[in-house]
Length: 336
Ligand code: NAD
Ligand code: UFG
Image (cartoon, rainbow, N blue to C red; front, side, top):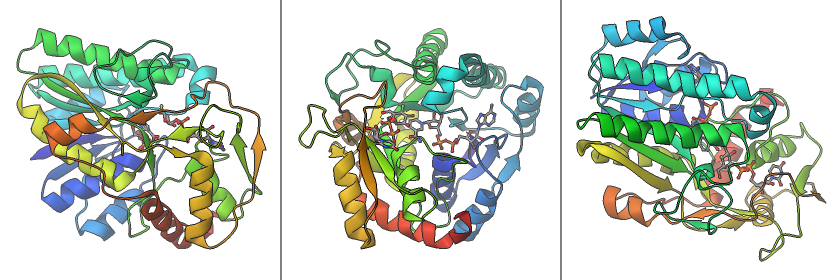
């Protein structure tokens, strides 16, 4: 199959590209490198022995995407490209709405004009908002109580995809609702390399482990959870990547479908820190700090729909993710 992967040099996209190339698919990546580097292309080639075709283009630029669709006959599109920082989206809502919504609409317009009718979209557990039970099932309502523009773009794009499927009875769209991706490829060649001070837990932990930052702040230890810290569903990015390959089968039936990609097991922030210390054999300096605005106490996936319909389930543990993170850190000592 010939697959367009938008955002394919990014953290999750690059892991999916590896799996696709290893399966024998032809991959064309479109990415403007706003949050990634071309080094991931070289590392994809090191892992797979194959170099994907790469276009450094912005999805906002309709003409540039149209040209790519003129040059290639795609079987399907996997759409990762988007800005993803919750806090930045609160500061720069217009940038987020323009990048994520206009970018997706441009992509959908090209797909319509060039008769490409299969799309997998990177959605998020954030679409469940704060008005649901902590264990998320796809049948729950979405869109209520989403507190930031980033999360709203994910919900809005899912709604747009539903409308596109209604208007075109041959179109199939799968929204994969990721929980908390962690870890990296076991080679330690690919991974998450955010610039500056990270917002997310594992990138922050990595900077503390490498000595770049002095200590982790655990935001809140007075939640109504077993140890008082928030609980999340941390899923190894390789399991997540495999979920995309499994989801391709769901594109054979037209219409909109959503699947949770998570492990089904919540882990607390403190449990994650303790596991990191155990696997690395070194203490990870941390302190308890006040709650972070907008955080849910706990959220995790009911992954049974993906298991039943896609024959997919997470297989790796948080210890595997931590081990692979340590290999990545070892390979990237220059990051320190
Ligand atoms: P990432 O930032 O590493 O990858 C996204 C890629 O998209 C980057 O390489 C960036 O350069 C590119 N991009 C952004 N805007 C673009 C544009 N207008 N044109 C072309 N390229 C553009 O992020 P990631 O963690 O790999 O996330 C991938 C997708 O999954 C995103 O849509 C994100 O919102 C979603 N998601 C991520 C998480 C997470 O925790 N990492 C959770 C839920 C959903
Ligand atoms: N945390 C800390 N200290 C830090 C960073 C995070 O204690 O330095 C805590 C947070 O308070 C939270 C947990 O670790 O309790 C996880 O936080 P992350 O920022 O890593 O992840 P979130 O669950 O807040 O958000 C992630 C993605 C979003 C996505 C959401 C869906 O970043 O894009 O999952 O559940 F929308």
